[in-house]
Image (cartoon, rainbow, N blue to C red):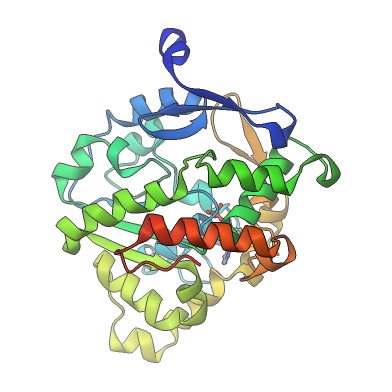
Length: 309
Ligand code: A3P
């Protein structure tokens, strides 16, 4: 791996005072050991019954993991007994790149796996197995603000020492964890055009605006549709409430404790729950920034019908 790292393009993030360096591996930026994690994850043997929850960081991964978990396990646990009440969603649904061993061990019992890997870096078996893939995306401006705070807190940098303007510039150059964000989306979108039956694209803002229809869509796509009796009994609403930001962010488990991303790195659970507010970007962006990023995303996603502005 040391030899590989030497060959990769590197970027030390100026807005983080040089605390973090990203490496470009297989077309996408990430921290150094993510390339090793990617290589290991590529050995995973996916099954047709697997459900892959895919996303770029800060687009609603935690929420989608919670919803998918609650939908798939609802016959086993009702909303009062759900493990989501006592376990971080990231520990309920493991990341392929972080917890490969655990996934392989529990494979026959539990079908949901999450990943931030770009489509082109997914294990070959994911492509050939025919398993289902759910992809969540979100307004780029809110993703950027969310990313700014998440990484800043991760490296313990106070607000006054982390220039938002510099973070914005790097993000617009595509340099961010799992970035360029638009390329991450585009790869999944292109694959979904070739195999529409295997993909469900969910937009964070739509999920917020119309949770009932989108959660029903998700359940149907996953092969766990709600029965008429369940709908009448309010199961859909109960799942929405269980997985809501208002509920999850106030649970003791999500306010304290640390998520062990790997044997070297842990991060506080609370960092996954910040504001969950649509349009928070307006508190950070100047008019020029807004115009620049809107133009950029228009150019990048032109012709896809995806709206990230
Ligand atoms: P903000 O930083 O804008 O608050 P990810 O899970 O991909 O890391 O994304 C994190 C973002 O999703 C954060 O956004 C976080 O607050 C928000 N989030 C976490 N749980 C959520 C939930 N249950 N419902 C809606 N948004 C949620």
